[in-house]
Image 1 (spheres, helix red, strand yellow):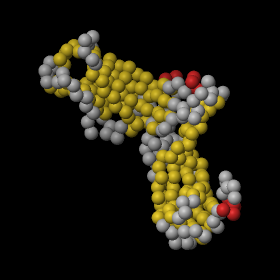
Image 2 (tube, helix red, strand yellow; image 1 turned 120 degrees about the vertical axis):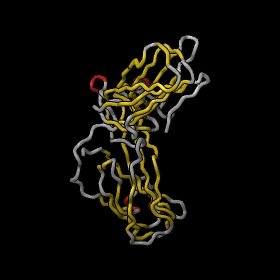
Image 3 (cartoon, helix red, strand yellow; image 1 turned 180 degrees about the vertical axis):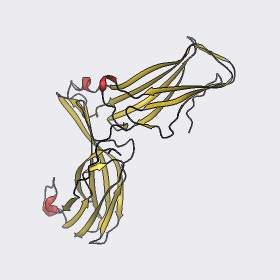
Image 4 (cartoon, helix red, strand yellow; image 1 turned 120 degrees about the horizontal axis):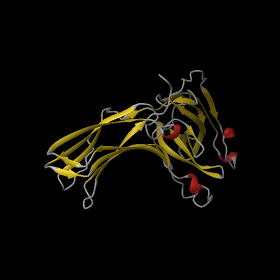
Length: 307
């Protein structure tokens, strides 16, 4: 995959990383090249490259205006910023010019370099910005390329028993009239609540009995994003993905396997700071034929183990 900007001045600018996966860790060095291709000799006033890591936060519409303090707490947090003059003013000859570069991944004032993450109200992004300046009368040529950061690893958590669960009308919360809920019993296990982000979440679900036929059995992954500070905070839960693991009125007493991969960028290790938190939950959802929903919620913690 190539990253080009084309323009009517017969010039293209490309950022190419040596590592095809574009995945890096704190303390490593980002190496690559800038490729400038021109059809004729072209003068310029400098070629610059900037590496930037930023946490961006925004409030949901329901939270805006509740706490004035939010407007300070949701300002972007800069994790890393390095500027480099790659080439002084001069001229690029006809053809392709390759200029190597490298950046050490060391944060500003010892701030941790969090995982790359694309959420709804919080995002953590690491980007290379290239700028080829061409004088006052010409617009600069710009190119951006995002790469992926995988934060610090921790010791593998192996001492975890499976989490058994049983869902019945009596165990449900937020029920006004328990008599209106059909009789059912659903049991199963989740492999663990503290999950290796690089391994799938596994377990089983079993429908022991149900007074009404079942339409679907689903597994929902939810992000819980919190933006705020000591004066107040905004907490929002949104769906990342929903996987149907059984369709129709499933056989009673059959253990249905659960298998869900945590998607890159849309998940990250569970993160808690003074200004924001990124947490995750799993919902087991049973949809009855009459579209009644039976939901059981499991908070989970994601981590990245050392190898």
